[in-house]
Image (cartoon, rainbow, N blue to C red; front, side, top):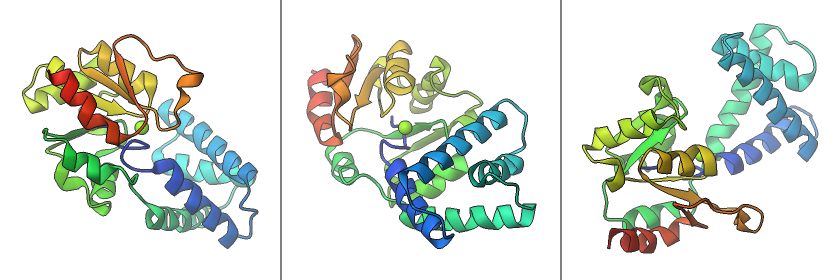
Length: 223
Ligand SMILES: [Mg+2]
């Protein structure tokens, strides 16, 4: 079972490219500081959404207002965000090791994501990857989210397999790999940044620096 964002889908890279183009098109400096300000505004707005303080539409407008430092009227804010979203969708890319890894892994595959079903259906389809996954579970329909063990167990149930027969691969050490291990699955941390010099890998969690290392790891675990 797989995480999507920053595991299969290069969310951060796609977003950085889209933001750079969007800022230029809007006459703003495409600088690291602009990207950081946008990420900060996004984090604050999504925090307020999660706290129930904003509706989804208000959250999106709040991202724009937080970033620009001024409030646009709703029509202008929605249009600003739509221009960014169009560039983001055009920039969508999977990591270059995904297709080969899926082809080299003779297992059943599924998705467990904390994003929404509609988003991940669209993304995986646009990336040409959707057909690899017989199960697609997202937090919105599950009403449970990682790191809650019940989210992982729902994934195992969808496959009709016990947790120990299921591996979970994700880029977040705690939310993905440790949480999967705690739910009884094989927890695999995809550490693309190779951060092992600064982060120690917890007992019972497996680390791979790229997806090309997965076939060997899973074959060894299956023995
Ligand atoms: Mg992720």
